[in-house]
Amino acid sequence: MKLFLKNGEVITLNDKDEVLYNCCVGIEEGKITYLGEFDEKISSKYDRVIDCRGKVIMPGLINGHGHAAMTMFRNYADDLKLMDWLFSKIFPLEDKLNDEIVYWGSKLAMLEMIKSGTTTYTDMYFFMNSTAKAVGESGIRACLSRGLVGEAEEGVVNDRLKEALDFYKEFNNSFNGRLTVNLGPHSVYTCNLHNLKTIVYKAEEMNIPMQIHISETKDEVEDCIKKHGKSPVKLLDEVGLLKSTTIAAHCVVLNDEDIDILSNRKVNVAHNPGSNLKLASGIAPISKMLAKGINVCLGTDGAASNNNLDMFEEIRSATYLQKVLMSDPTALPVDRVLKMATVNGAKALGIEGLGMLGLGMKADLIILNTNKPYYYPKYNTKSAIVYSGNSSDVESVIIDGKIVMEDNKILTLDEEEIYYEVQRLSKNLTIGI
Figure (cartoon, rainbow, N blue to C red):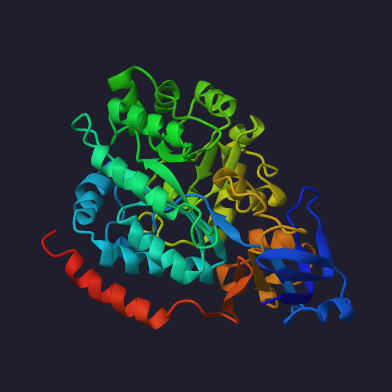
């Protein structure tokens, strides 16, 4: 269907940071084909005209790091240190996962993300065929990777790597290009050097991007230095994993040499302020990374450590934290943090034509209802979105040119069915744990 959105306030997030007032957006075959003033002759060529007067149209948010099906663990294990949380609580639960649990957990995540304005997300987890099925049904755009772990024995990762490569061959660029696939070695503390090198070799051979957790906590960094004599960043650089197509999640505990390596290798960093705060991992030196030209995007991490997938919260937390960390209220201003949640996310995922609104760009956008008390008086809409807006302001969502949510009603997913199935499955998940 050809859509014509008329008379909205359009936040383009383009290179000029333009905001267009009383602007119309034409959408055909998943692309933006018109951007300008209302013209009845032009609007008549579209199948449907939607009045956006008094509303804001902006690019959909891009969640640069997450584990969708971990919604099944939400509120199960809280107030713990990362390694205690992972090894004593999360990993035992993950041993009980199956296709059905991951499918419904993924659908719950997609429901939450779409309702809160996320149109693209990144995922590293297990039973990814089930998640891919949910991506196809929900209409969301996604980059999926089968999580790869193998620390105890050399070569133990091989079966999982084969599974990951088979998944890549079957699903990369599927669903009209909405689904892409990466390789996902988990971290330096869950993958030994032999396995990391094997994964890097295959990634290079097949030209597959990678994503990995790096330097999330002080303990992780100290343990890596004790074991290998160098930081995780330096170790992964020597392994050959750090590239311009790599997404490095977290990067909380870095020294200046680490930041220089990430910059020189043009690595993309996914900042997860909510998760890092809750697990007391620390505050990532985002301002220093940006000053070095590193592409930094935003992510929520999984709902087990956040505990929601609300990118509006991440936007606000990110800017507040850098102001405090740098003792500078000008650190990470509005335009820059909004681009971290959109433009930078698209760059990290290597998806062209995504993250901003302009002619020929992908039609992934959200419509916000700003007729709320906290948007008044209306001086600067972008500031209002960052400092006082909420995910509940998202009224409609369009992905790949198709309406997936309209007037707060999800059109691609059965909301009540998802709640029922998730609650049913959760009752058996923790038995015996």
